[in-house]
Amino acid sequence: MRVMTAADLRVAAAREFLRHVRTGPKPAALPRPALDRQAAELCKLLGQVLDYADSYPAADEGQREVLAQALADAVAYRDPDGYCLDCAGRPAGLCDEHAADLDLTDAYLGLGKELGIEVGL
Image (cartoon, rainbow, N blue to C red):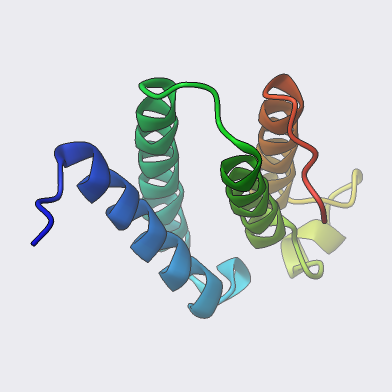
């Protein structure tokens, strides 16, 4: 029987959260407080996964592919799939919530670039 370390448990928690995000309601269907909690949890878990990754030697190609897919999933989750009424009323065409989502997608893509990982969309 394999004993899971704290790092393994963090990765398992991150995987479970991402599974829920992929199969759960789209962000536009959630109330703002739920979105804020989900975003905070995602950032926390992503930070834990990156901390875990930093504790190991450079990733092999299979690991880099997994991280590229995780970043692509995060970008797809944050990409607005339409405009809301608030977006329609803004001169820039995006409400604060959707603009913040796009800022996060830029951050995810920037992280991939910094790590030398091409994020396929």
